[in-house]
Amino acid sequence: MQMYTLTYESTATEEVQVTNMEELLEKARVNNQRNGITGCLIYFQGGFVQLLEGDKKKIEALYKKIKIDERHKNVTIFSDDEISERTFPNWGMAYYPIDEKHATKYEFEQFKRNLIMLSDLVEPTSTTAKLFWKKIKKLISEPPL
Ligand SMILES: Cc1cc2nc3c(=O)[nH]c(=O)nc-3n(C[C@H](O)[C@H](O)[C@H](O)COP(=O)(O)O)c2cc1C
Image 1 (cartoon, rainbow, N blue to C red):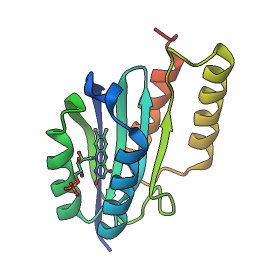
Image 2 (image 1 turned 180 degrees about the vertical axis):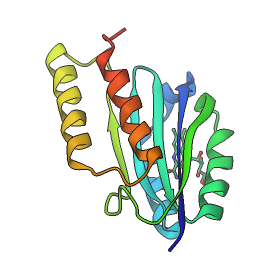
Image 3 (image 1 turned 120 degrees about the horizontal axis):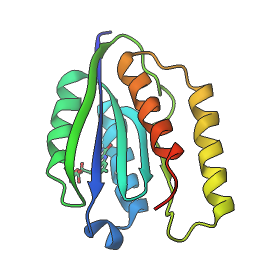
C-alpha cells in the first residue's frame, strides 16, 4: 500500500512546561492508532523532532493540527516521502524525552547511547527516515545547553 511519511522539527513554547506530556502522548497514541499512524517523537533541548507515517490524507490532516498547536512553534518539515514500508511499524508513537536541565550527566549520556542504539536497530525505509536519524544524531552530538 502506498503511504506517506514526513519529519519536522519545532521549538517547544512555555506551554510545554505546564503540559502533561503523558496526556499529550496518550491522546496522540489513541488518535494515531485509530488513523493507522505510527512514528517517533523526540524531545530534546527544548525542541521536538517527529516522524509520522501512514495514509497521506491522514498524515496531512494531523500535521495541520500539530502545526497550529500552541505547545510549540517554528514547526518546519525538513523531509517527506511516498513510502511503501514503515520504519516504525510496531511502535505506535515512540517517545524519547530528555529534560536536560534536570537530567544528570549520566542520564544524559545514557539517553544518547539509547538513541544511537535505537537508530542502529531501526532500519530506515526512506530518505525521510534517514534524515530523521541524521538530525537526531546531529542534535545529540552537540553539548547540552
Ligand atoms: C510535538 C507534538 C506532537 C504531537 N503529535 C501528535 C500525534 O502524533 N498525534 C496526534 O493525534 N496528536 C499529536 N499532537 C497533538 C495535536 O497537536 C492535537 O492537539 C491533537 O491531535 C488534537 O486531537 P483532537 O482533535 O482529538 O482533540 C502533538 C502535539 C505536539 C505539540
